[in-house]
Amino acid sequence: MSVETDTLLGLIDQENARVIHYQEERTTTTNIIFVVVGIIIAIIGIDQNICGNADTILSLILIPLGLLGAFLNYKYHERIYYHELLHDNYSEHLNKLLPKAAIGKAKRKAKETFAKETWLFKFITKSTLWAPWVMVNFITVAFGIIVLVISIEKAC
Image 1: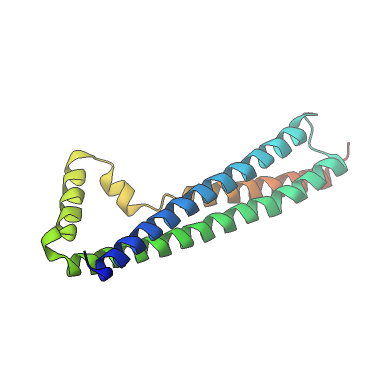
Image 2: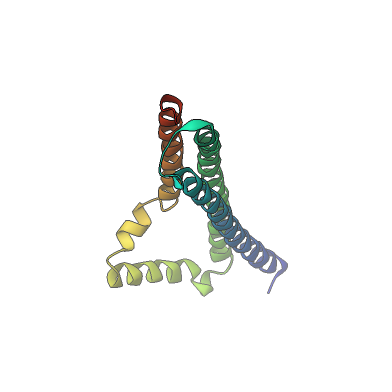
């Protein structure tokens, strides 16, 4: 193989590794935030009454934690999307460099076969699967605001 082909294969492999790395990083970050949020919600609900300074302070922690989670999820999505685009561009260049390999044709055939064999294909390709995680973080923010309002208004 030529130096150009080897370089493109190396770049494709590198971008694929970056996508996987950022997906794992997003998963780990999200899990840590959700565990902390779960602990805070358990502490708020342990006395079965939302009132007082402790619940106010915990709700003030929930709000920025939810915003941080939403922000980080979106930023990881941007990074993943960027590296997926680079991966696809390198694959296209490799396809042009090696037309006999028919990389583009193999990708199209795989998509067509997948579309025929699974009913979820249209949903998966049309939806943004990262968006529900951002929404869960905004629900955390909303819960924090509700707890904050109730704990300020209600005396123990």
